[in-house]
Image (cartoon, rainbow, N blue to C red):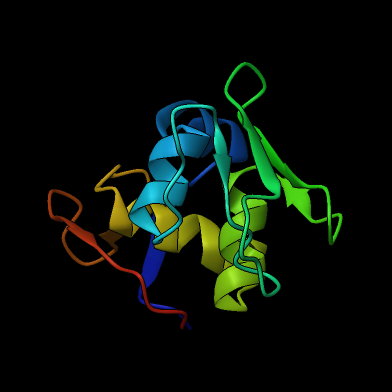
Length: 116
């Protein structure tokens, strides 16, 4: 039986609202220029072929057709599934969306990013 239960589950909407696509890409090493273009990390790219759309919080590469939001980017670039990507973004940006409460001490809240 698991000793912990989720107190505040992460939601896709919470993550997308908290982390802009530009901030997310920059954090993960993709430098977005002032024209909202960047080199795509998913193929060999000498010239910027990826476009960032700030109004929809998404990206799209016109060469390899990769696109999506910051969660999709983390899943693809880090090789993670959806839940792992949400937890990684939560941890990397200190969002505090994934916290668990132990059953033995209901007043104690601690962060836990390990799958049990």
